[in-house]
Amino acid sequence: MSGFVDEKYIKNHLINNDSLFNYIYVIEQNFDTVPNTHNHYGASINYQDLKELKQEFLDELYDSIVDWVYSSEKYKELKDIAISNGKTDAAASSEISRRAREKFRATKNSDNILIQGQLGELLLFHFIQRLQGAVPLLRKMKITTSPEHERFGADAIHFKYEKKKPIIILGEAKTYTSNYKFNQAFKDAITSILKTYDNHRKEINLYVHEDFLDPEMNKIAEQYINNKIENVEVHLTCIVVYNETSDIKGNSREEIIQKITNVIENKYANFDKKKIDTETNSILKRITYIVFPIWKLDELAKTFQQMI
Image (cartoon, rainbow, N blue to C red; front, side, top):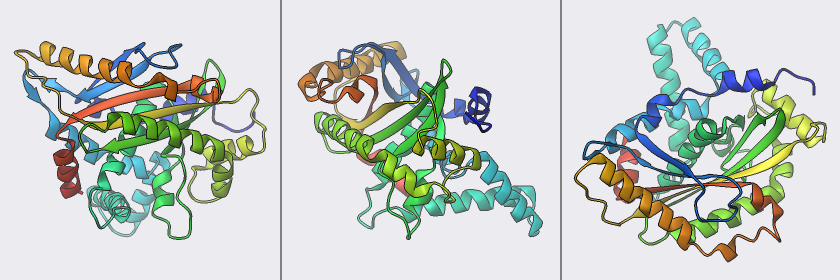
């Protein structure tokens, strides 16, 4: 395959989100779900002793908005332009962060809590890079804020190599602040990702040669659309962020984390596996789930909205 996007390129273009994940506890195991041929994930806001680090988590997520909107190359380009226009290094960085927040705000619904959807999409962006080692093929935020373009169907589309095999990852995020909505969110995520899978080639084709793809990623997208990437596979990733109400009080961090783990395990086990039809939809054999319960999610979403 021509172009410069090799495994080294992918590794060098993964963002460093260590700071964010200091405040996220991640569980990886073979949960009681379908498919059970590989591990899936659970996650929660992390604890320090008995204190949930919710504000610290939000601060880190807020700081990462610029990474979601701009690639490192685009960030440098914008920064150089701002400096050439007479700004200091610090002022140029501040301008780019402001621009990123404005793009983020531009997609908000006047009825407010659509910010919860962006919260899930931002987390999805980070989890795919952190857990699956895949970089954004297409930056959906730029399409969402462009009045001339349809909204891209997938909440994320990333690319990586796995044992030298090229992999496209389509991502879906579902975020529900209402109580007792986990099963609905999980079902909706599966339905949506299957629709995205059916339409993703057409939708990627809409944005080839547009300003939505980094130049090297544009080559990958073009080769994919023209069936010039040998042995390429498509994988799916769904994150379900939902409001949890179970009692997780404990006398130590270990006790609290174990209760959270139990909650996540039960959510996986109690979802109706018949709704994950891998016989009809073989692509579901390649799906990876991330279940992320948040206690008082509505309050967290409102706080995040106020920060933006």
